[in-house]
Image (cartoon, rainbow, N blue to C red; front, side, top):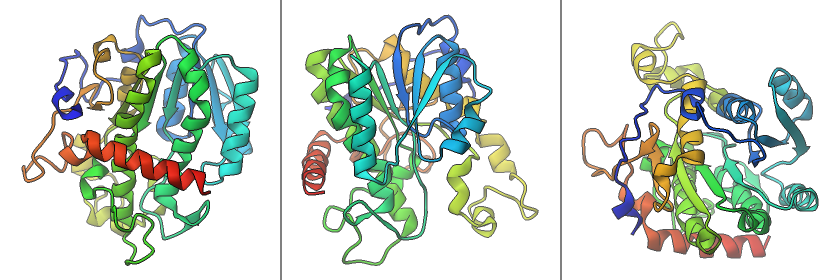
Length: 325
């Protein structure tokens, strides 16, 4: 069971370690890597660190002009190709191009996402947070599976968050077709889906020696908050009354360089061998935590996000949704 594997490894890193510190001494020359959302926020820092270690990084982009500007200062082998996670034809076209130009894929980082946005529909009518954060990446990974299986020990990293604690999968109404929409509940469902996706994918990569993990990067101010008004961020305790980072945020939030560290740790650490599908935080495997614990909101992984049976149930639902799209 995945819950039994949720045991910290004492990695030697910590909450404020940076991606460059995690990758120090690691040579990624020749590695073929894709990072979704790799031209802003955490994704940009992830690309910077990986490319700086010799990897060849491909970034799918929805806004080519913005991507060119953001990636211009990054040294190394970084390229882009158009893709929109909310448009399945775009995802399939991107993946087809990758299959035509690559014989293998060593690392896929499903980093892109949206958070707490107004109700919107993507694809064949999917709720947008579930549709972009989960189904878009599910479709992309499915299309790229032959290349992942062709690699010697490929890894897939899915960005989840402590947002998974807000909601399990809403099994009876995933798309908010029969109930009132709640933007935070929908975000929580999507982040649970990201964690369960890594759990399920790990079993499908096993025969080829691949691994999949989910990660909580930490609290970070990035463009992910673009849908949140200042008043709401003040109410959440992220900003003070003057609109500046609160004392809580200054103490507990991370910089993008620190936020990218758990992603690259999950992507490269040998300590994760034999721990398929685990949920990671602060550059280590997270412990399972009692949802009623006073610390549960900010740390650890709730049991519903690392449940094998739930992962398989979501995988089956996702395959059906994709086949009908």
